[in-house]
Image 1 (cartoon, one colour):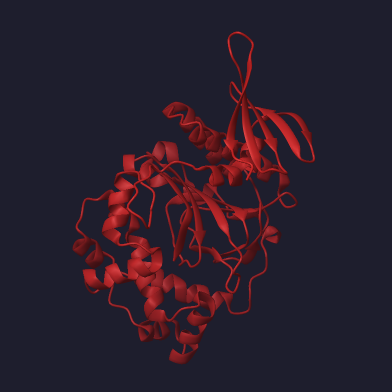
Image 2 (cartoon, rainbow, N blue to C red; image 1 turned 60 degrees about the vertical axis):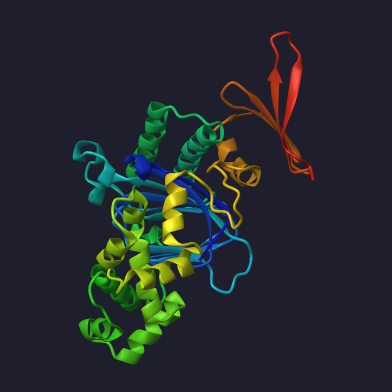
Length: 358
């Protein structure tokens, strides 16, 4: 289930646009496979990334780039109660023409990077991510400027070469686990039982059950329901089909079972999720509607990324000044303060407090 405290969603698919960006605090996830290039950056805490080739721990300020059509899972580490927040960017090639998308199967590789590992690749991606976040924070809606940043992210991700030695080692059961997950991923919208998975892979029923429970942390039936719900998200958000039709298309027995699984996974009814998405509203337990805008606690989390894309003018341990597009920002770290400096036409310096020092 997602904790919606830090939830933010810029969703291009609402307009048929390839780019989307979200901030989430996951407490559980499932494997997925998308036609998009995915860039996930840990803002706080720790996450685990698992693909067909490796599994590894992602710490704060580390990121993983997931190649299109790569089956993968990125989730909060089991047993960790510490707050964990992740920023995810998707660039969906299915929403581009073939001439623009190119050969996505050959053009990208899944890779983990940080300040120590694949440093130049990491630096370039962070800079462009910072530029994108600056646009969203400043409320800029220049389509062509966003297109430039999006395609620069694609270019940076596509022109890198990594060797097999760059990948972390996976666990002993990893290969069998991925075989089972892939089979579920290929057949989730059909009638599917644990016995079907075990028979197809020539595993015993007890081994298959233990294998899935060990890695997903939940029983097979619940995992299958979550996979179906996760696969239905795009159809739900596009809003063309009824909940009943979406439930049938993803393999759920009925809309009641679909709604129950959706609420357990996302903490909200699918009808409410769709409505709030279409109206660009944040999730709220109360009745107060809020537009989907980045708030101050989210901006503070994003500050290190944004800083990478701007010109640093001065910095010491608890104080820094940098230049953005047409403005100068000042940050006081000890007080958790962020202020913007502007000069009036008459030369007067005006200080705008963006975050209270409480």
